[in-house]
Image 1 (tube, one colour):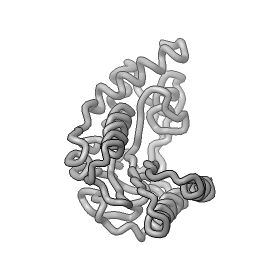
Image 2 (cartoon, helix red, strand yellow):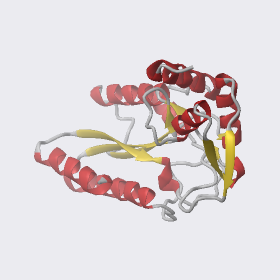
Image 3 (cartoon, rainbow, N blue to C red):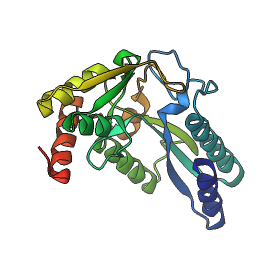
Image 4 (cartoon, rainbow, N blue to C red):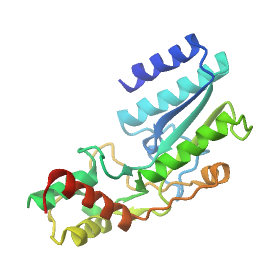
Length: 224
């Protein structure tokens, strides 16, 4: 779906003379990356999941359409987006729901993973600024550009759960499991390029972001 759907979008951009497209890529594209910071200049050939492969393919297609047809493409590599109205299959939603309902949480690799969690507003604002930069025809971005969008500081998964517990006032029931295939140990977004172009830095830290999500979750599901 990722590949076919995105190819259809690119083809229609070409057919209807669309000049610019901003599309969602993913931090999963970095795959088996041992660098301390994930930079847009890092190699991305060591894919370890089919999702990462699909996003890598999309970036290659965007690059090709840019070269062949002059379509200006901006790929945004999102790092673990969270917040109100987040997908129910993501960690924050799953953990919050399980703790409230006194159900087990499957914790892989003893929770030693770290992630650059990114609150939804810290995704939306940079995208808005990039759109304005494009509208004003500022020659800051190349015709085929890639940008990381991620939280400022990576957070260990155990710490992530601790914060959820604190705001819910309940302890999690944890079931330890080995590391999953296709998962990466750590992600850490180098957002230097994004900050330079958009003059924007992440505003919502992990504690505030989780609090906002839990407030929304309780209101939406009418639960304590």
